[in-house]
Length: 278
Length: 127
Image (cartoon, rainbow over all chains, first blue to last red; front, top):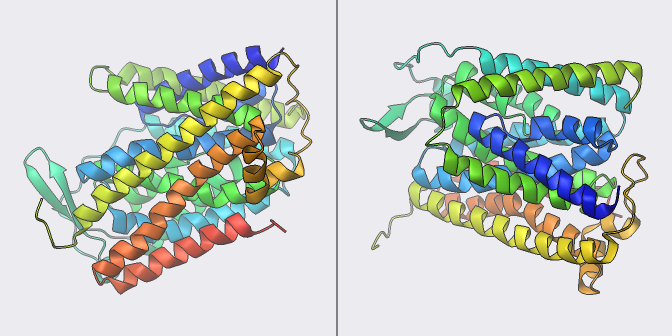
């Protein structure tokens, strides 16, 4: 394959990943690495580098809109970023020591787990959450625009949320993904933060988390300009398109299809990892 | 707008603008370098199946920027990617200043800690 053909196909693939990622809220990163390694036979280390860069682009692009609308909480984000950036640094250093087929295996397991998370129905929201002493000291409580005007919320479970965030950061650094699903889990389930605030704050944090491991990957030579160029531009274009379409599309079936694709890719990654083909 | 009080909302507006500008300028630089790259190397064969790491200049910040200024296509793309990586870092740096204006020193410390981790990551290993 020539560089020209490769670039065209990878741009197209990345655009579709970005589009579906934005429509389903799962992000394009999780399908990019398997797409590049399984279909384009790219070494997983180059794939992780390119995916990480595209994650920064989409999360920063989307965060710009959410922050202005007042959904994301920059205090919660900044506080938890201490955990995610430390986790990301550890993950990125670990990635350079873990054998490649083990990386593929871990990636597959994470794919299956995120597919399972995304299919789980959300329990009804616990609206009356008592303020927690630590959260009050850290001034994490906030408010966001709801259908009935501004809604106040309290935050709990700070130590549990903080620890989960370290894990999310480590996964992001290890695998070159945004690990948005784990971040949302930490805020929504452990810290009882309203879902809308959790998802948008997670998006806000993803860029900083990814930037923390990007430095390590750059110095290790994982970030290839020729590959990252079509991946980054494709994903960015796809996610911008997705954000436009979001209002009109019924995403329920799309989410189901996407979860199915993720399960298949996850199984394939695990298989290739065990067979030593990656 | 005659808002003189420094609030989280105002900070959020500036952060939004900062992120948007960072991502757009990075995308433009990457696209420019990409077009040049395809014109020069479009017909060569791809080799991503075997990992050999990037050549030394593309692995460091100053190396990539120096290559970009000499008109090297991959150097220009890499510089665009560096701009992208710098965008969230700039956001954290801005928050230090923003929280300081709110006189929220606890969050000045948190932001400074995150910035220190990011800078450590970007500088570690670049000898």
